[in-house]
Amino acid sequence: MFLRNVWYVAAWSHEVAAAGILARKLLSESVILWRKTDGKVIAMADRCPHRWAPLSLGRREGAALRCMYHGLLFDGAGSCIEVPGSERIPSGLTVRTYPVVERDNYVWIWMGEAARADASLIPALSEQSDPNWHYKPGYIRYDKAGYQLIMDNLLDFSHLGFVHEKTFGGGRFIAEVRSQIERLDGGLRITRKYPSVPLAPFIKNVAKFEAPADRWQIYDWRIAGNQLVMNSGFAPAGTGALEGHYVPEACLFHSVQSLTPETETSTHYFWMVAHRFDRDVEAINAELERQTVIAFDEDKTMIEAQQAVLMANPAAKMRAIPADAAVYQGRSLLQKMLEQEAQGVAA
Image (cartoon, rainbow, N blue to C red; front, side):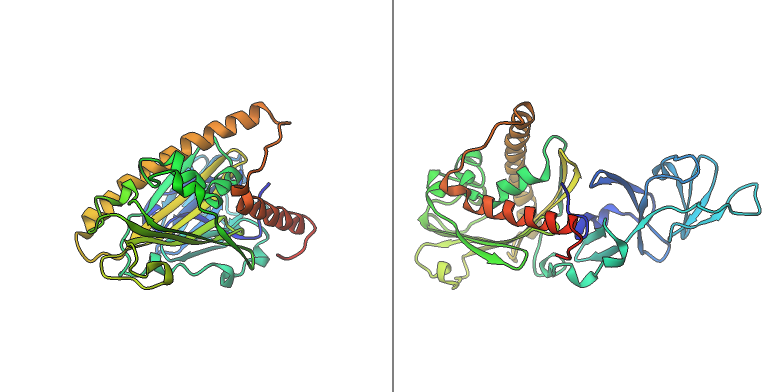
């Protein structure tokens, strides 16, 4: 069900505070994230090996973590370094730890074989740490939908004209545009261009020009880690944006959306929509966040309802339409990688 020997987003950096413990279920495993005194993030299983008390109920003590049931103290490597009332530390008192890398405002975690964790496989997301791009980090928890249905939704933007008619969409013309699909190493690139169309509702309070507009969405979907990285925008129609020339009035956006399975039917959704406007930055951040939250709630309502129907009809078969091309290619690539991992083949 899940790829394990890949990097996933465990949290935004700000979620793992200098003090405290963040508990999160990832790939059906209960994990805690905390920082040592030097700021390094530690990820370990949320379970004391003594009596299986949750370590998320524990206490930070400098570079160590204490279980607050019987007081066992563990270092950042998961080794027990103190047992109150005992001069000897019994064998086997270790907590599983996970490889972690903090980069571009994400905390990345490797849930598979630790020896295979290679930080060079983490994708570069420089816009998330580039001060020229402005955004507010977002998070949604899908408590009633698995990551594969959300993946399907992101691979098929034809739904924008209907699910997001009053937010990201603007009309059925979106469903009438065919995606250009390219195979990448470990993923897909989707290109969608809309010449001379209305401004989407979400952009009307931000854009400094009137319709018609040329609109584009170009994004890469990375199978390992379930991640979308997109460049998109709007420009006055006929000014060359669809050929890569952007006039000063153009609205340029960069979005990253990362899905980390919580369980088979629940998902962590980390997202950001960044812009490069040098005016009213905080106001535009707030407006984009407001509109995006509304739109993503529209997705969540639809996808969780879809999950409920699928669970009630497990033998039913979905029927394909032309807009599903990227969905089926993405599913095929994912299945191939799942099979390779099950056979012990490196992706």
